[in-house]
Image (tube, one colour):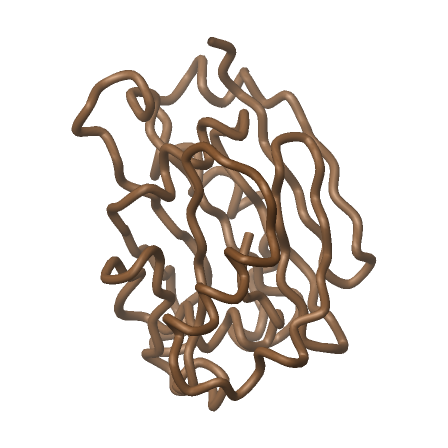
Length: 199
C-alpha cells in the first residue's frame, strides 16, 4: 500500500487533482499532524471562516485500513464559531472509505455558486447538482437519495449537512453515515457556504 496521496478539490473551478505528498507522511505520523501542515499551506491567516478562502482538510491516520480499530477521520478548518482552529473527529466508515479510494488526505477549497455535492469514485471526482436536496429537512433522506444516485459497491461513506448548516448556525455539525458526526465548531455551517453535500 502506498502512502502520501492528497486529493485537492476546487469547488470554484469544479476541478480536482492529486498530489504525492509522501514527504509529509515520512516526517509525521499522519492524521492531525499532516492535516495541520496542509492547513498552514492552504489557509490565509486573515481568512473569513465563512468566506471562500477558508479550507477543509480531511485526514486519516497511517493505521487506517490496516488496524481494525483505526477508524477516525479528522476535519481541520477555521471555525465559524471561534475564529480559531477547528478540529473535529468522526468515527464510522469515512476514514476507511477515504483510504480505500486511495487517499490519506482531502483538501477542499473555493465555493460553488450553486448547491452541489462532490462524489469521489476512486480517481474520478464528479461535481453534481444538489439544488433538489437543498432545504430537505431530513439528512437521512438526503443520504438515501445520494446513495441511490451514486452507483458502485464497497466501503462507502456520505457526509452531509442539515438545515442548521444551511442556515449558517455557527456550531452546525456534519453527519456521516447515520449517527456519526463532525460535531462542534461549525463545520456544517462552513460546508453550507461551500455547497458541499457529499464527497
